[in-house]
Length: 267
Image 1 (cartoon, helix red, strand yellow):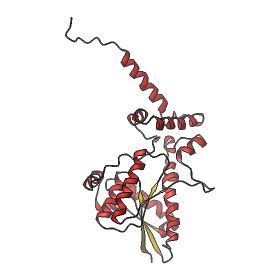
Image 2: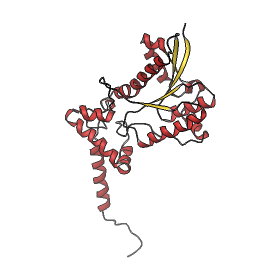
Image 3: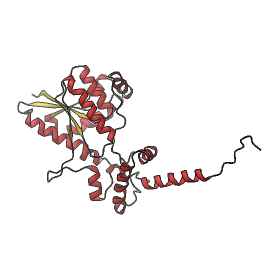
Image 4: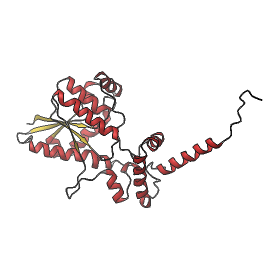
């Protein structure tokens, strides 16, 4: 018979996982480790938020947030950006599948959790490590899929128990935002790579205008993949970020050059 052992929180630096940890602190719940998977391409404001939130947790008796990265077979770490530049491939979501989330998010967290659990001798007495995941009450299907996935792996099923506190507490997205506000913390905003293919056109143009260095790095990934992209136009899958930015710039110049013939009351 298994018994419940250490509790590990999967922290994504977004609204849901932040609200989940706030709720666990307010309820005085056990948390033994908090793990953030760093793709190496997070937005600067995300890194700043992780540091700020970690500093908020520690004085309240909770562990500091641990950052982990994808590790190659030779033991060295590599970012998602570096992988794209080296291999000439865009993040997998541009091709219609989510391997980058598995490789650069879930796998590094799981690898760290395995090492940590062994060091804690968590499994020696038949204990299960509890993994807390921040799916909210408005997306129970994600919890169902995760449960189904772990059931297919006998080792994982024996070693881990998945828990979804927000679902248990009936907290949807709006309730998560309210919890962060009530705690007096800033809202974390969107947590994603600055070169995420799921970015909306306005977000891409905002990156160009407000973080030109990051935008240039995103275009470098797109350019490196161009010879191998086939029918994929670029980071936007059906469109390239470079073409979007160039088109916006041309349109802005066109509107700026058009004469104004509006009647202003003068003859």
